[in-house]
Amino acid sequence: MAKKLAIIASKGTLDGAYPPFILASTAAALGFEVKIFFTFYGLQLLKKELSLKVSPLGNPAMPMPVPIPSIVQVIPGLEWFATWMMKRKLKTKGVASVEELRDICVESGVELIACQMTVDLFDFKNEDFIEGISSGGAATFLEFSSEADTTLYI
Amino acid sequence: MSEFDIELDTSGMNCPLPVLKARKALSAMTTGQRLHLIVTDPGANKDIPAFCKMTGNSLLETNELDGKIHFFLEKG
Image (cartoon, each protein chain N blue to C red):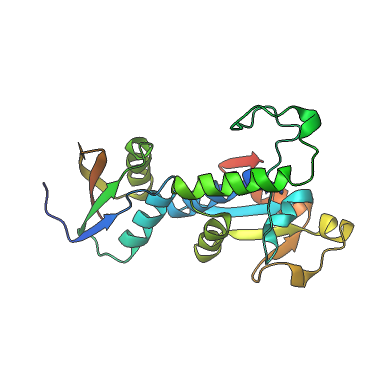
């Protein structure tokens, strides 16, 4: 029987989008049955048009070309700049885009599940999300994760 | 260098693309056919053997040449 991987994706930032999609697409390539449950800010990863950002604010571990004090990081445009820099770096290092990894997940049969409670909480609409996803609640996730070989909260 | 049926060059690509591309190439091949996989991602030294182990494909040979890792896989 195929191994199973259950993931909860709770982050909606550019850097937070990589771990669930990388692990899910790779697990699918290794023959796993994979389900990702998207909750709270993780729902952003299911949007048709992704506009994911990365913020240096409140993240002292983010490498910057020059040290930028927190008080300066609130300046409008700095988040845009950090996102632009990160995307450029990802591209030059040959890292796949989030969209590409998500497409591979869909093609390889990874089940993408939107947490219904948080969809309602944020007033998201089904048409905001890509085709082919399903929705469910805590019991849906737990039923699958109870039989999973690996379960991750990201 | 071993004989092979298909060559796949993933030079410049980073994790997890070499594994994903290898999987795609192997799924279009028949049992016993060989894939010559070229990778520059140093993480592949561990990832490709792990991939082979979990998917029932055999890793016949690995060698490193001019910063590129050459894997020879046989589809299981």
